[in-house]
Image 1 (cartoon, rainbow, N blue to C red):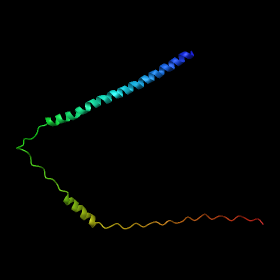
Image 2: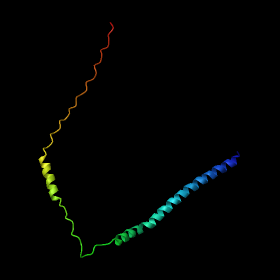
Image 3: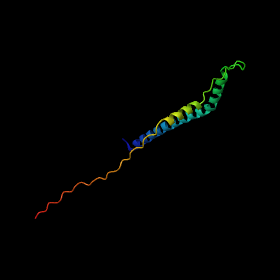
Image 4: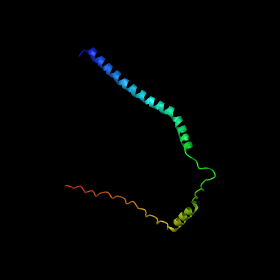
Length: 110
């Protein structure tokens, strides 16, 4: 291969890679821009869908459902907490110091 031709091929490969990167970034920017343009209209679509649902007439309104109060449940929970005996304190472990291994006495020649 000719040295000039090799450099040109490397240069063209680099330009192709840069082109693919720029194309991917432009696709991402396009999708992001489109979603930003559609975002304010999503609220309007939700409002229109809610307004399209039929509403009961004022004269024939249903009675509200009974609301449960939490007070009886709280009282029952407090009573159950009072009935349980307190837990016994846990015994603490004491650390036992490690004893060093016994060293053999050197043999004395004499």
